[in-house]
Amino acid sequence: MAQGKKQQSEKAAEPTPGMVTRIFDRVRQIKRAHPELSRQIDVMEGEIRDRLMSIKDRIDEFPAMERELITVLVINGIHKMCDEILIDDLEDAENGE
Image (cartoon, rainbow, N blue to C red; front, top):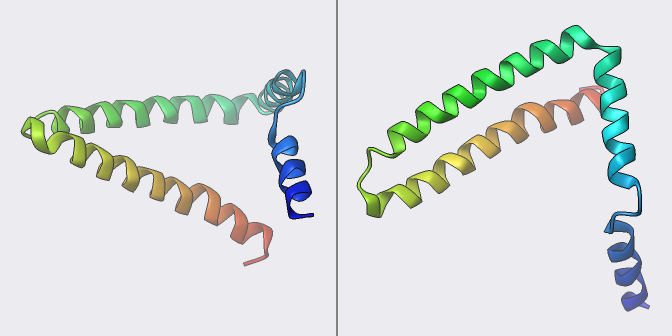
């Protein structure tokens, strides 16, 4: 019976035909409904990209043997911040906290 549940969850995770298109269409609709917010977010994403390029430039100054570890640590830190700010706050808001 556990095998059946595993197969069902694996099957549910697989994309269905047209799923990606529907998701992109929905995102496009949301962005069109909120053009100013979308534009502001696009600008901020550009700023984040510029900052990441600056971080990469600093990382490139480390000795080659240390660069990979520092890169992984920076990526981990950025990912953790994204989770804390974007995901955890969203979950807190949904839970009324």
